[in-house]
Length: 261
Image 1: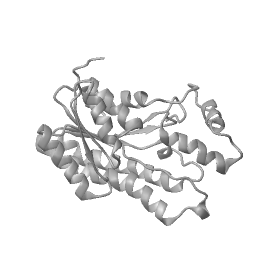
Image 2: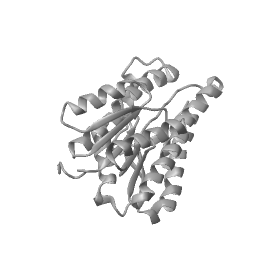
Image 3: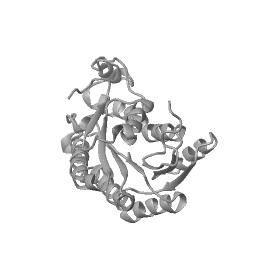
Image 4: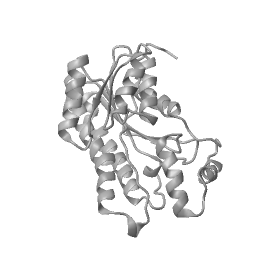
């Protein structure tokens, strides 16, 4: 690994308190980046502290991506602390699982607000900083459900299809400003979210014990394993690098072959 690939680059990461976001943060930190970690839970401060203890430059900001004021404050803090914003990774996400007739309007709104509106707001504000330098990398977290909706999650699928649409539209608009915009589509990743998915889908789909449904899912993955946050971070770091300078508007699967396109 080239430990200096992102030296002097400033990276903002939302949803960075744990799981995929924390894994992405560690990868960029290992490669020399200055990190601004954000989440709407206090755990993000512990995540940043743990990275600093490894010698990585990292600050943390409590922010709600559904609030434009919070998003503006996040990016303002990043610029005031480090002077610029080079890479912005919009990873904050939320899911609930319910049968159609039991899916509440509140859950629909919350999932759409965090997953889709949150990505839009972060892209909007990030681009305003990147345009000043005529350079930037924006990477949005979509999902395997941006490829194919799953049962009992129409709101989540809609929100992630929306992320792909935002990505494609902004890639066209921002290309002339030296900014690439891409999305990642993680499959089954070993995170807290997938522990919830295993339990909630298992209860609705049948009398599954914890872990049994996950075994069935894994059997359908050609590589026969779940992914890790480091698998996702490897793709994100590539898309943020100069090796991906001619890639924009793409949504790339990282799922062991679960969905192929």
